Length: 440
Image (tube, rainbow, N blue to C red; front, side, top):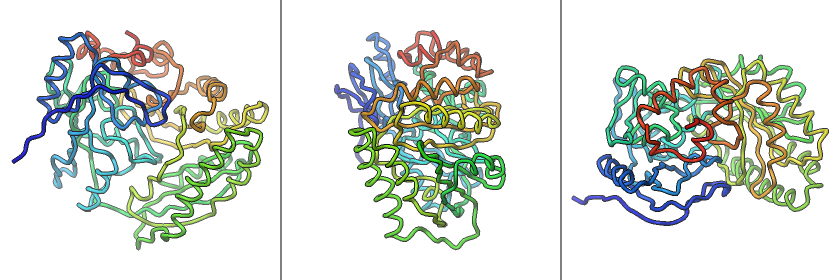
C-alpha cells in the first residue's frame, strides 16, 4: 500500500487566459483533508493568506495570492455513487471532464453543464459556471452537499439539512468561506440530447427570442459583430437513437473551423484590425446547419483552444434583447473591431445567495476578445449597458464592479457577507479581488 503526501512548491501562477499572474510564497497540493487543515494552520501562524485555485479558467484574480496557493491536484476522484439518492460525491480537484466520463461509464449524467469541461468541480461551482437552460440551472444549483474546511481547520458538511445557512451561500462561495474538499451532485440516468445548430439572422433571433427559449430545453445563440448573422443551438432530450457527428464532419466543424481557422482569423485581426469586419462576414457563414444526437456532455461541451478574455453579465430575462440591441448599436457606431462572437444564454431562477440567477429568471450576454488584443474600451462600453439594466457580472469574468454596486443587485448579499464574517473573520482567504467585490 502506498501513501500520498502533500507537495509544496514555489513558482509563479498564471491563469488560462494569461491576463492574471500571481507569485505565491508557496504552493501546496494537500493529499487529504487533514493535510489541508494543517496547511491552513501553518499559513495562519506564518501570517500568510490562502487561496484555492483550480485550472485557472477564471479571468479575474479570484484565485490570486502572494501567500499560500492551494492546488487540488491530489484531491481527485469519486468518493461515492448513491443510486438510491441519485447523487455522486466527488473530490474537489476532479476535472469536470473526468467526472463526466466516469458518470457516463456508470450510466449517469449531470442534468446541465457549461460549454467547456476543463475546470475542476470546485473551481467551476465556486464561480457560478453555467450553461443554458429553460428549466435546468447552473452546475452549482445541482449541488446537494459539500465539504468545506474553514479558516480554523473545522471540517463542515453542508446541505439543506446540515449547516443550512452555510450551504445557502457556499455553493457559489468565491473561495471566500474556506476550501471546498468534496461536492455531492444530483445526477440522473444518462440520456440523449439532440442538438440542432443553424444560422439565423439577428433580427429574427431577437424578435423570436422568447419563443425560442420557451420551445427548447436549452437554447443559445452567437451574434457575430459587424454582421447581421447569428448561429443558434437548440438542445432537447431525445428518444434516440444516438447519431453523433461524423468523425470527419465533426473535426471540420469543431476543430478546423471553430479552432484552427478561427485562431488564424483572430491572429490576423489582431495584427490588422481593419480586416475584422470582412473576416466576421466570412466566418459567420462558414458554420453550416447540422443536427446530431449524443449523451449530454458530448452535446453541451465543445473544445475551446483559441484563448481569449471574457466579460459576462446576467440580466433579467426580459431585458436581454434590448441590451443586446444596444450592444450592437454601440459597436456599429464605434471604431471598435470585434473578432469574437457575442454569446447569449439563459437560466431559470435559483436559490443561491450569490448566483447570477439568484431569485430571478436570467439571460447572459458574454463578450470576448482574442488574447493579447486591447479589450478595455469594448468591455467598458458593454459594461455600461449591462449595469444600466441591473446586470450581475459573472464572478470569474472580467468586470469593474465593487461591493457597493453588487450589494444593490443581490438582495441576499448581506446574507453571504454575514456567513463570511463568521467563518473567516480574519480574512485568511481574502485577496484584492474579494476586497473589491465583497468589501472588507
